[in-house]
Amino acid sequence: MRDSGRVVLVPGADGAGVAVVDGAPVAVDDLAGWVGQVQRRSSPRWVLPSVEQHYPPLLAAGVRLGRCHDLGLTEAVLLAFAERPGRPRGVEAAWARLRGLPEPEDPRPVTRGEQPTLFEAARPVVAVDRVLAVLADQERRIAATARPDLLRLLVAAESAGGLAAAEMTHAGLPWRAEVHLALLADMLGPRPAPGNRPARLAELAARVSVAFGGRPVNPDHPPSIVKAFAREGIEVESARAWVLKELDHPAVEPLLAYKDLAKLWVAHGWSWLESWVSDGRFRPDYVVGGVVSGRWATRGGAALQLPKVLRRAVRADPGWSLVVADAAQLEPRVLGALSGDRRFAEVARGEDLYAGLAADAFDGDRGRAKIAMLSAMYGGTSGEAGPLLAVLRKRFPVAVEYVEQAARAGEAGRAVRSRLGRTSPPGEEDVDERRARQWGRFTRNFVVQASAADWALTMLASLRRRLFQTEAQIVFFQHDEVIVHCPRDLGEWVAAEVSAAADEASALVFAGSAVPFPLQASIVETYADAK
Image (tube, rainbow, N blue to C red; front, side, top):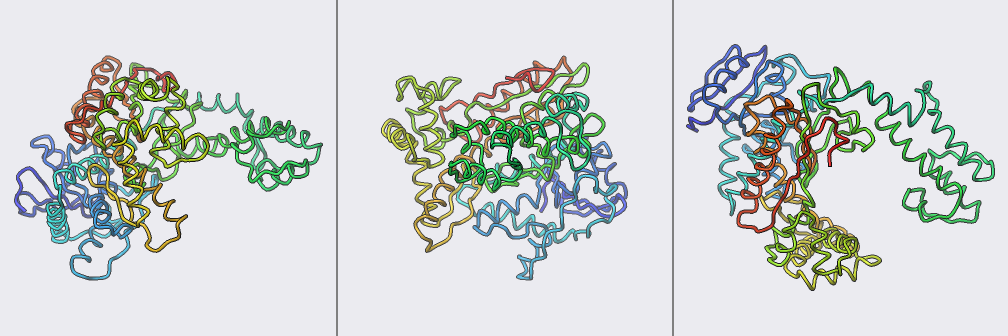
């Protein structure tokens, strides 16, 4: 357990804790102060039972960690790798598994507003010997894999993501409440009394009823809409927007408008603003690895589903800028790098992969090229998708075979892995053909989406390291997009560091691949102005 570059940290009660340095446990009364001193002096790799639980109190005390190994996040990755997903991942459960004992459930996550004061005894204190035993076991399990180097990179990126997520919640996304309120008033009208619809929604609801001959129809109740169309002699399978768009009826236009505005009202209306925005910041609770593919989720706040119209409310502080960057066509590029298809790599060299694909195989028709690519990654075969996929398969057989092999594995009930080793849940055995094909579509996309998450997390970790000693703050991250809030005079430098982080992630995750992964950055005052 001796490692001069690593410190095991076990927070306790009342701001105290135990640190293990060079194999020797040290009792610390003021843990935050001690950690801050050690971080400034030697910047070790900190080992924590749970970054989500133990890092926010450090941030509240003004202490940031440079690197870490999150035992809980690592345990989740290793359980999935061993095809045992869904098991408790906390230190106590991991230690119990080592001893063949019953596994206790993980404690309920502490949500925003419930965060205890600095290391107060809101949770049981984990014994140091159990932490050390779990750490040693995780190192053994990683070393025993066929590619421990890749799995170590995944664990490091996942742990860095845990640090970044906590820091993003602590810093918050700059949010102008007055802009948000003005948008709501403009689109919905004044804030309604409890139980009432906003004026604009009430107007649209009335128009829907008029379109159905004056008979009241509740646009919030899909069965009512289906029955209303049936009375008009129009049979529809559901009231979903894509179904309604195919109809020729005067109720369609107000219904679609109602659906869009109602979603804004319910998901990001006045109540959302009061609940999630304070002191000029939106602070969601991010869940690292919240999706099996490695993508993040949120615990309330819908941070990863912000409607474009509200991007106008995301504005930099005076004298600061937002650097907004997103990876162009990340998943198709990932497929090219995974498969090693040389011809596909040549097509992917331009900034617009779909345009290059169209010029090579689809007579310049970008729309058809995109449909073919999405069909390959998601398993679509209906309509024109089937013939277009056949063209893609003929021109890029190596790339298409990669995802089709993953699909066949899923159909047979086998797990598949991402580039760095994130593992899909195993499918069921002896299922009917329909369910087998459904799981095959899942594994077909999993290898691409999870590998894209590998790249994005590695990029995030690299960017975080590059910005660590500056005032620049990573304030938003989703799948293939990142936002940095920084002093205006650092904007150009941050944009260059974003590009360098993308290059580093590509070299680490897809070493030797000729497929480029451009991360295009815009320096703006408001999120809505980003490209």
